[in-house]
Length: 160
Image (tube, rainbow, N blue to C red):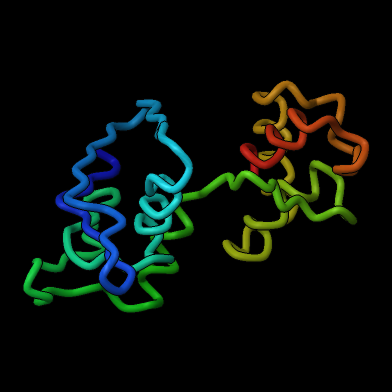
């Protein structure tokens, strides 16, 4: 699996938000989290990136253990610089797309690889063009978010 969660628990004070979540995702598999508002979907996604630190359980991404803590609190979390390296392999699309309004669709998709991963601009551009094409947005690469429909904005966010 490219992602494996074992026994993920999360508490905020005395409130248990996640209770023993197990999940295994293989490359190419599509997984959908569905549930009522407040059921823990976003909390689980935030745990995968350690934006929320689980109370217990383990998280493995690409055979690298990101987090491993037993219920008694013993265990380990990898150092912050390693968390950031592994986070660069993952992404989240939020309900609010958070596109930069002063950047075109193409620029929005290029921004992360250029700034965070230090990719050369031309390489990032070529990758962004391919991703936008996969999302059916080739004809919209020079448009700003305000010029795109909600669905188009969402696809730009997914490509990003």
